[in-house]
Length: 154
Image (cartoon, rainbow, N blue to C red):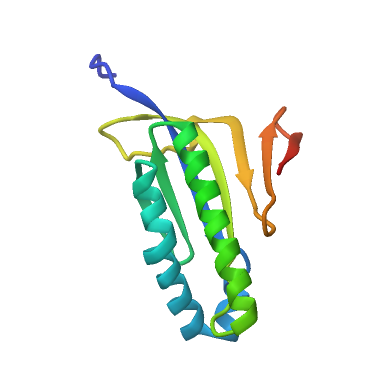
C-alpha cells in the first residue's frame, strides 16, 4: 500500500441524456443527430461554459459535466431546460426537427484529482433531478437509499 496522500476534491456532477433517444433515432436518424448537434452548439455548451462547467465525458446522447459548485450545476441545468423548452415550443409550430428533451441529474462526488475524474463508487446519495415541462422544474432529493422526495419549482 502506498503511503502517498491522494488529494481529493468534492465536485457537483451533472449527468444528462436524451429522453427516447433510440426511438428518435429510429424515426429520423439524420434529423435527430442534426438537432442534437445544433442544441449542443447553441444551448448546452454555452450554458456549461457560462456556469463554469467542464465536460468530462460524452456518449451518443449523453454527457457528464463537472462543476466546482452545486449552485453552478443547478443553474446550468435550469438554463438548459428552459432554453430547450422554448426551442421545443417553437419547433412544435414549425415541426422542422424532432423535439429533444434532456433528462438531467446532479449528484456530488469526491474524487482523486489525478485519477479518472469521476468514480461512481465515491458518489454520495444526495442528488437532484431536473425535468422541465414548459415552465416547471422538479427537484428530487434523496431522503434515504430508496425513497426520493420531490418538489415542484414554479
